[in-house]
Image (tube, helix red, strand yellow):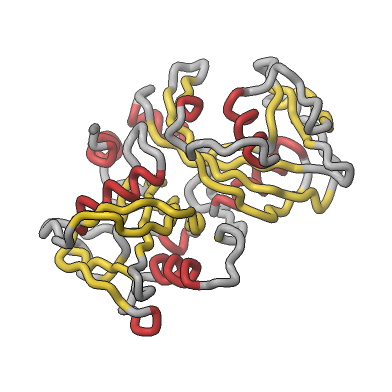
Length: 318
């Protein structure tokens, strides 16, 4: 398996980039949570690491857990996505990253505990009322996993940075056209009649929107709000995170300019809270409300699949 982190750092150096992580929250039969004492920061955290090209988030969480702890785990459910700029990481070697971290609850199904001695110095289960001192994002993941009232996936509130701009374009100047992992968001908007808002793209295909890539300095829900302003000219409010999806064939895309990506998509339900949707005339040529039972045939394959997930028509590998 290609070491994606090593590859992209060889191109961009220490500069801040958005990295996609999967983190495992593992509970034993007593309800205790597995934590690892990390060697790079000498703090307690949860098993996990950077997504590799071609992986699903669940595969990444299981792989990293096995490498770091010796446990074989089975994913149970996604807990949420943690993307706030407050969770930025500054590594001892000088690397900087904004996290796009998906927390996944897992259970142990095999293996034996042994820290790798490299990234992990110690593994230990902690009772919920005796957790160690944790960085804020790990504390939030553990809290969200333990809270029985959480019936929906966690996402951070909309957050923006005034410098949001050409981050991905600047990155391409360093990486070239090779495949990079790009986190983004899209939303399903329905009106009072249950009709779905679709936009006709300049490619001639319809798709759910707004949709776009997350930029440095914003949270993933902030991406949805920003794209709503840019593509539709309205204010929208993300209401529910349905799930985060990647690793399937339709996650791999090559743009007209030759740039290759693996898309990691946070799928939201959202409401229009102000304004009337209008196409921007650049990316979106036409907007129309469609009955979910009578969708157009010429739809973008990935956005069609995400819409089907939102409408509950089928279960798919995330």
